[in-house]
Image (cartoon, rainbow over all chains, first blue to last red; front, top):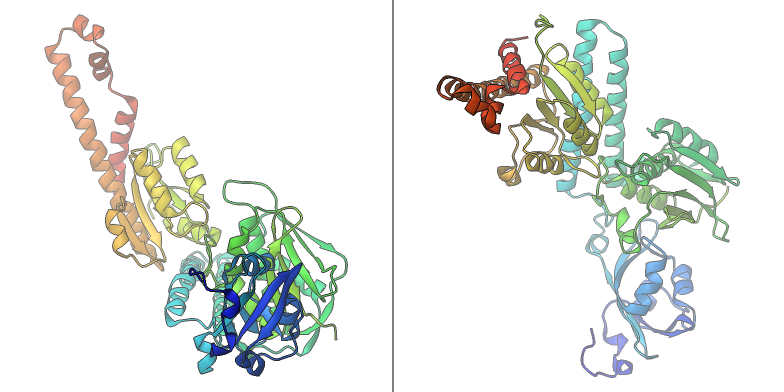
Length: 333
Length: 182
């Protein structure tokens, strides 16, 4: 970045047109100054605060994982933040401090947010086309085959398969709408028992013999039960599919529970191979999927649903070395 | 659907799709046409092909862990004798130019199209096998006719030709039945 021998102190952040702040690493990264754009767009009164706490008080959520954020500040990297739900999002370029000098964070609003045209993850037409063409084709094919068999052979069971295929198509459509339209299709206005919703959601997922365990009591929340059910389904499906890679016949154990920390929320964890730390922030991106046979939208939908409820989600690691998703900011009614 | 003579070996089709519902629906569509095996992963497909005689493989492309493209490459490495039909929801791009499959079907399909594709591949395989059979058979004949028996027995390859491999005989029998409409 600052390859020349420029004295880092001489970098004037007020010359930067977008939000920027300086920080030093003194035990923990601590904010030392902000520029005008930062004060107007993001807020004031954070000088002297640890960066993590400053972000929290300004309502900035780091997208994706927790640990890489700290690593970013130390080593200099790019990460993304968002003021949830549905507000401005920024790409943040870090200039890490060297040998006790000052580091900088330069914010750049992402295009979608600037124009107000939609969320940063709003699906491109390309992705919609590929979801529709790829993902609807399988259930459509199943429905066609079963309908014909049902008609010709007069066996009831085939119609069951048709019904299931139709349900799946409906789910795909709903998913695409959730991502594309967000607020319009979500109604977080019911008191929801998260444990009950999670258990019911587990039943609908093809779990390949995987087991679900619950640790502690899950909170209740004001939420849209249908969408929260989808959030659990997608997390469970993710755990089952990635928890036991093909050829590995082990049984996956999925654990849900309440977060021990003061942040209100819950987690969904598995004991599979986990997600490599560098990949963690990316798993929520639409179309990010090394392998699931679905849309590659599963976790993007999870993040979107969490966002629309005003919750934050982060991918971390479980005690068993598997993947763990933590949903925070869940307020009990 | 007239079942073909059960004494004749019927061709075997292996359906590979990570979605069980899809694989089972395809099995349903092929009912009565051939012997059907279904597996739900690329790795299981290779295991089945290694263990059992498999004439036609219906292969999904997009599968977790081991994709259809990977399976196809592995089959090419093994010099797999059978025919491979890609059945997929992915519209083909230029990448298919270098892929060693025999047919490419896009989902969703009609039953007729699927059955026609499998039938066509079994007929082609039948002729291929028949060609192999005649080639081996003609060598056997010429050796039987021209080389004295005692010389023949001293020569390993000569002996092998005299005793025509069973597999070749079996499959040439099979190919006659595959040519018939089911």
